Image (cartoon, rainbow, N blue to C red; front, side, top):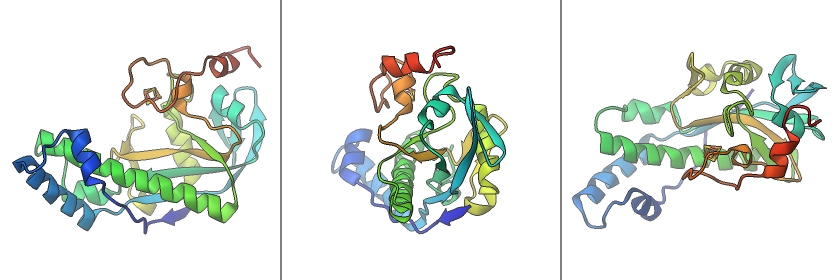
Amino acid sequence: MEILDKIPFLINKDALMRQLMIEKDSEDEKEFDELIQLAIQCGRPKAVFLQAFIDEKTNDGVVINGITFTSKTLRHNLSDVQRIFPFVITCGTEMDDHFPPGSDILKDFWWDALKMQLLNAARLTLRKHLSERFRLGKTASMSPGSGDVGIWHIEQQRQLFALLGDVKNAIGVELTDTCLMVPNKTGSGILYPAQIDFQGCEVCHRENCPSRRAAFNASLWEEIQPGSR
Ligand code: SF4
């Protein structure tokens, strides 16, 4: 497992103020400025990844380094792939250390938005690092728990963490008994070379989701249903 822990980040204050509906020249802006300064001082986004190869492709999943991952969609997306990159990216535990959740609902909300900026910085840095170092070209990724229930069960976070190794020791991220990751602004998944992009949203029926990044893809959905292969 390799660690990226010197990840630069920028905070887009104007965009965040619009997103959080903070008025210019208000008291809220002053308080938000203080949080931005704190985030700049303490924020340490991080990533870990591993280069791994698929041992076996089964009807409904893949085996990687002896660990079985069960997901028909993952199997479908890795049909032409042998080398994959499991990863965890995070805003960093320092953000919770310096501003523990629960002190103020509104500021918690603002702090979460700042944590999200750090997480996005970790995501971009990891993708760039992998693309440059391994000459990957186009890539896509899948995460346990994204898309409709059952696309790739969130419980498979356990297998993903087992594949990576001691993630907590490396970057402080903990997996809870219910397979959530702490700190909350943390992401995980498998990145792979892909000619066609994939987003979990393409196989998610949830309507009016404010975070949707891609339209529902009916033909892909049909392809991954039981008995379609
Ligand atoms: S549509 Fe919303 S709930 Fe569904 S996978 Fe995308 S972000 Fe998640």
